[in-house]
Image 1 (cartoon, one colour):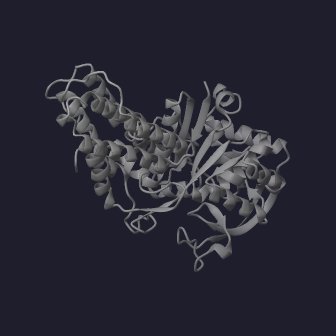
Image 2 (cartoon, rainbow, N blue to C red):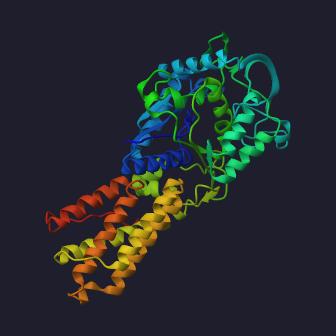
Image 3 (cartoon, rainbow, N blue to C red):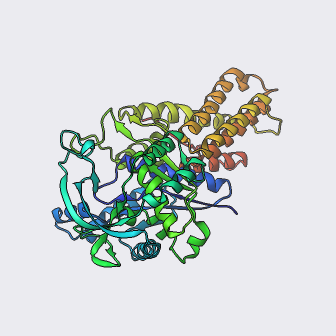
Length: 477
């Protein structure tokens, strides 16, 4: 059996999860479920990033120690993933002993390769980003993302020799040995690599909440050398059976804001450690809400729990993935959720299933051949759907399924099978075949509802449905 290892970013445990976090983990879960359908042995990793000065400050403000604070935040993520029916194989936490041991082993490999050296760093540091920022990137003297004035920091650090690996990274990205999807994100990275990139810090002197650097305990291992290693420690790196079985990663799913760290820093670190590179990095676009960046100050942060309570977990999964192509940045219109739910789910797939199942209950299901016209569109839909899914274009794959939904709805209106008893068996069986295919194609996206529909259909075929039993797939809201 072929293996497939897929990861999400680990989410920073500084506050409650929002729909941006939910989008990425649902996206990865759909791909993982699709691969399982195809017979792959899937390992799906997600988790939380729990170190750094920002978390220490948040914990202090909340009157808690950092570990207590991240324990609570991490549980919010894990509980939300369960509510969204995320089938992750493991949930890695960077404060776990397993992760700490993996990071120490990884740093040891970099040290032995001679790629870590001591130096002094002076630069503008944004506490919100937990990263250094160039003066040219400031907006009116402030970090453009957090609207904070960065602090001038001068301290002793240990650095990683990034420059040594830039030519090799360029080559591997250029020939798609390390495939970055979409092409626009690949070109973005190649442009960055053409600039004079500096080496980067792997330790910090003034950060206290983190993993101590093995070669100087007063230094703390810095965010990216710590956080990125989760993709290895989640597999019990370096000697675990899961690491031997599942590495390299087949797909890292990340947002556009962390492309540089995953597509440049991470390959360089892996090369230094003598570890195989991931096969693909899929970079999804970022989204705004009602035309604005999500912000607690603006009050436009959408809590996924609110959507789940209103629409249910399956519909929430669908609504987030069907807003716009993931290759692009996009805008979510919060007021459009209900309209889309009713149009696509209640009046779309739910209505189609209801019509077909009602006919199957009313008329006897007899053996017959299928309408070639229906067979043709089913096959075309499957072919196009699989092409999109293999390229991680979930929005486009969903559109193909709904072409089939609309076709079958129109097919019922045109054929009116109740008026032609002689054609009824072929029409009904063709419709049932179409519905069965839709259930399979939508199962990775809406697993609970499609499982219920499949169970209902199987019992319908075998005559085990009770006279008053209803499916109630997607009630209007």
